[in-house]
Image (cartoon, rainbow, N blue to C red; front, side, top):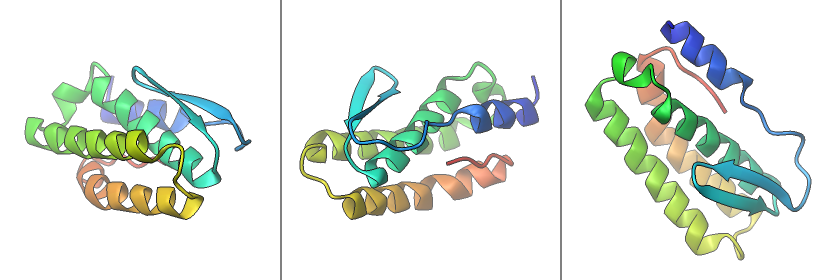
Length: 115
């Protein structure tokens, strides 16, 4: 499998159109998303989770970059855990923006883009 195959696999991961009460699985965590912002954040985290656990990732992405991506993912998942019942769509989008500011430049080094 090539890096392009990995990127293609990631691009196939999409959520259905947002609807209140939508359930999204991110790793071992099941999220019920009540806002569109939370839905977009969950999709990005779902793709990041899949990429970090994909068997080709250790061969294609440096360990230091994988660790940085995993730390950013943990931070966002902790934020969701603390705010899932009270966060507005705008707050979830702000969390997504912060997550992307960390992850997107790393992913771009490897030609990966999603979410």
